[in-house]
Image (cartoon, rainbow, N blue to C red; front, side, top):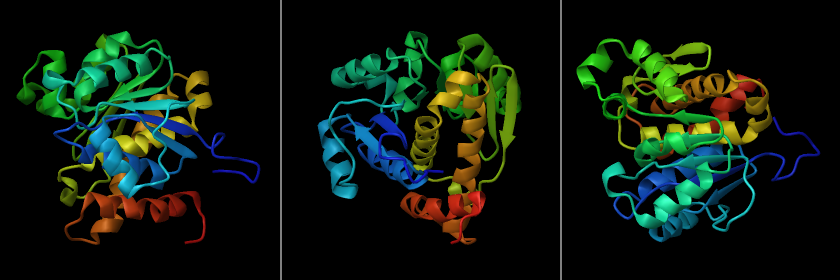
Length: 257
């Protein structure tokens, strides 16, 4: 919760390198979700085409370098066809040692991190990273999230209707999402929500190794509750989910709506 003496910097600044020429919308959805979850600023420093779309949708986004408290990397990128500029940007970001989310095309740089990292794969992506079959992971996703966290040295948020989170000394499960949330772009919004939480809780992450997993599970809960609010029992869009985030968070923190 911001206080009366907070400003845009003390409220948290999230750095974002997401989207691609092929999937520029992922950048828009992640930035949209982060801003609706609550940060003082989003710095979007991804590909030029995606940056234009981000600014058209959210002119308050900043497309210049500067200080950040956390990074969101890789949403809307294909790991097998990463653009050289994106690789450079993500490598520079992860080397800063700040709390970092690796999504989409960024999973393979987890070993370059010097700070706390959370990866956000779905079943197929975790199968690729771990060299396992999708069926094997689907049969016991909680155990695989734990195995991946231990083997890779990161916190894992394994996406699905039931979300499994595993970090150092902690495992959590979230199941708040409606089935209508199985839609394109939902993961991009989840990454944006989590990015906002990391940027606003960077000091807590540094002080307690379990905080990253708790924030990941919290992001999943908020994502699911906002989806319920946006759905009202029927289909939803991801932009509709993002629009429902402020009221969802207000309900959680007890603010008047």
